[in-house]
Each structure stands twice: as C-alpha cells, then as structure tokens.
Image 1 (tube, one colour):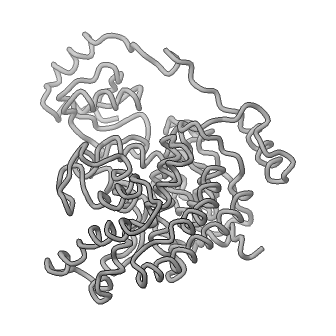
Image 2 (image 1 turned 90 degrees about the vertical axis):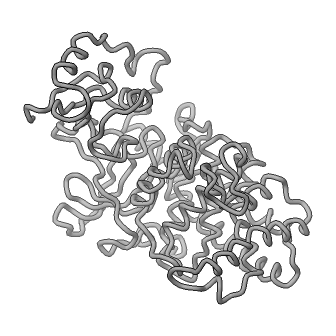
Image 3 (image 1 turned 120 degrees about the vertical axis):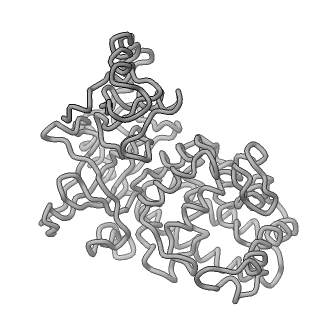
Length: 446
C-alpha cells in the first residue's frame, strides 16, 4: 500500500476526503468512478452501507493530511453493523439450495423444502431456470407472433384488439412470476437472431420484471406487460422510410418520429378496455426527470410511476439492441450509462431499483471473472446484483471446459484479498468468445 493511502473505518470518512480504494471491487458499489472526492452526505452514507474500510489518499482532496488524521482520531466508533437492528435474513446453505434445485428439476418438489426464500419484492422463485425455460420460450413465441399480427391489424383498422392482447400476455406474466431469469434468458439469448426478435417484447418483459421487483400486484403487472408492448404503436402512422432511416437523423426527421407518441395515444383512444396505466406508459415513455424529454418536457413527479418504468425500460432495451441508429451495447456498459444518468434523465431511485432488477450483468450475459475464466450469468442475486450465479464455460486461457462449472458467487468471500475470492470484472457483448446461450438452454431443440 502506498504511503499516500491510509486505511480509514468507513464510519469516520468526511467530506473532502479522496477515496482511492475500497475493501471490495468498485463494480460492487454504485460509484461510477474508481477514485473520487467525497462531496456530500449521500456519498458518505453510500460508502458506509457498502464498505467497512476505505483507503484515503492524503495528497488528494480538499483536506490536508493533518486534518484527515485529526478526523480519524476524533471519529466515533462504528455505530452500526450488519448485525445491528433487524437481524439479517439467513439464506439456505449451499448444499440445501443444490438439493432443492435438483428435486425441483426432477419435478419431485415444486416448492422449497422450507418456507420460500422471498426476494425483496415479496415474490418467491418457484421453479429453476432449466425447469422454466420451456414455458418461457413458448410464452415468448406466442407474444411475438401475436404482436406482429396485432400491429398489422392496427395499421389497417387504427385500433387494438385489447382482448386478444390481454390473453397473449398472460403466459408471459405467469412465467416471470415463477422465475424471471428464464424469460430474461430467452430475450437476451435471441438478441443475435435478428428477425425473430422484436424490441417491443423485450421492453414489455423489462417493464414486467421491474414491476415484479417493486411488488406490483397481478393487475399492475399485466398493465406493465401490455404498456411495454404498445409504447411505439404510433409508429404504424409514421412513413416507413423515416422509421427505417439509418445513422444520424435530421431535426426534421426527428420531429416526424416524435409524433409517434401522439399517434399512439390516438390509437389507444379508439381501443376499448385499456387502463390508464397503459395510457400513461405510452404518453410518458420519452419524458425525462430533468425535463429534457418529449413531447411535453414533463419533469420529476409530473411523470407518473408507470411512465417512469416505461422510460427506463425502453431506454435499456434500445441500448442493448442493434438498430438503425447504433450497434447493440453490452449490458454492462448500458448499466454504467444508466448510472451516469441518475439524477438527471432518470430519478436516482428508479435507476438503482431497475439495475437491482436486471443486474449489472443480466441473465444470459457473457462475463469475465477475476481469475480470467469466462461464463454466462444464470441467475440474479437480489441481495447483490454483482454477485450472480454464473455458469463457467471457458478456463483462464479461454479454452472450453469439458463440463460447465456452476459458480454461486454469493457463497464466495467478499474480501478481494481472500485466496478464494472471485468476482465479475467485465461484461461482454452477446456472442463474445463464440458463446451462444441458446446452446445451453434451448427448449426448441427438445
């Protein structure tokens, strides 16, 4: 350790200190930059919630070395720990989880062997990823085909067959409620299959998963699924050559494209049986918290909750999907981009909870681990989005393993100096290293 850096108990940090290093990987914290000066109380509280010890560079920041040492000596002892207050929820042991998953996979057991372990949203994971894969894939195919057929009818009739649409989203809602990882796997696995994937379905699923994480009831989840599908329904009234334009668009072309919101609202107005929540999603999905969106430049609390969910889900899907305007970005890069938008385009709590929903490294994304090995994310960890379950496929020399290795990162040491510590250091684009997630869970091949 450099003489310029000193270890400081996180309870003793102060505004003006320059944080050069943490006691855990930077990726496991909400801090965008690896090294920063503390500017306000919020950053202090975040540091204290994620770290026990930080390392302060005494030659950087607004405080002198003498002031830093004085604050450390005068600081009180740590007033709270993980064991204080409400007792931390105890997870089932690694071996119990494995046994439970085997029994569920063999269909001997449909519920956990003890009271269900609930996620923060209050919903229980009822099936394994493998056990849910076939149902998720079938629901995905059905909603994709239905969407294409319904949009063709909208173009002709100017209204939506709401009854048929509601019926089509039911299997998707059911699957996400049982195990959201399976639907996320299906969506991300088909990113490179071009014509078979439509962006409306992806956005619908992200909205639905976000609502599940937030604890929305069944009706609210159905509204989110339907609204996500209909965000861009107004594009049917935009000239095809404008919709398909590649690269940068002119201000005039943008003005025409922006009309799809009003066109969409007109179509919804002619359709019977759509709840206000769906209308809010279509109306506000391009508005931004700082007022920089369109078409009304709504800001802050002027944007209803369903509109906020639609906005971030639509942005996430756009950035992770190749389109006429840009290439598809790795989910890890998109997560960092959204993190940088917190406090301006999106409210901080919206970004934080959305990234908790999908994870910085979503299900089916290709990740590189600190030991050099390469794997695919199997399941999210609701307690720590950067400690998912990973299926390791390539060794540290990037050679294919004889047999995939399942790594429960939540069981590994958090201290990066521990010899058994392993963590995700980077996310890669889909298809990186020749890995296709559908090679591992492909229900259509059964």
